[in-house]
Length: 209
Ligand SMILES: N[C@@H](CCC(=O)N[C@@H](CS)C(=O)NCC(=O)O)C(=O)O
Image 1 (cartoon, helix red, strand yellow):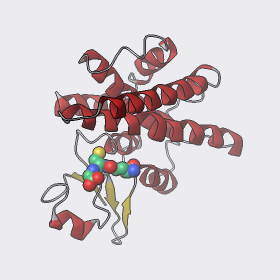
Image 2 (cartoon, helix red, strand yellow; image 1 turned 120 degrees about the horizontal axis):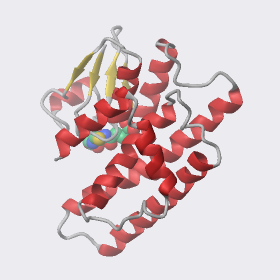
Image 3 (cartoon, helix red, strand yellow; image 1 turned 120 degrees about the vertical axis):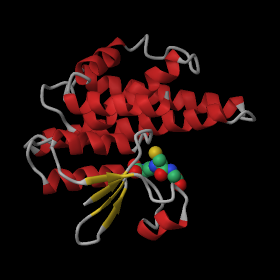
């Protein structure tokens, strides 16, 4: 199996946390020719990373789908609980983390690089990130499904997403939107003690600094 990924790719980080947490032996490679190249498009017509290519040739893009596949194919250690109810809760937090926090953080980072950006667009994106953080806070606070000692698929999305938010705050690029959400800060501190999360946060930091 080959996982196409780069250390600085926000969507690849959750998948590498799963790979490291489960000690899965696979090759991790940067997209040949780079993102957008015809060489990589020949491998993954969708053109995005992360992308997992199975030994039988099946090509899987989309981080959440890859993580579910790895959970099914390599069940130990389990990153999903046993009951349907608890699994549903993890999926809710994972969706919020990916679509409500990580996605808007990635878009804000892209807007920050655009000198001719429209501030109204930037502020609208920031508002949506605030809403995603508020949603994540509900689940981390009232239903601490992602704060259990055991790692979950939701943690794999939420921890790097929050880490990237803290980087934007530290750089002064956005206001300190986590100061009113101390539970999320505490959550990140707890979760980054997991070796797989700490390793990937280090990889991200090394790539974006
Ligand atoms: N929804 C996708 C998003 C993947 C994504 O946008 N990845 C970025 C890198 S972090 C990428 O490949 N961008 C290149 C492109 O969109 O052409 C996922 O979760 O895997």
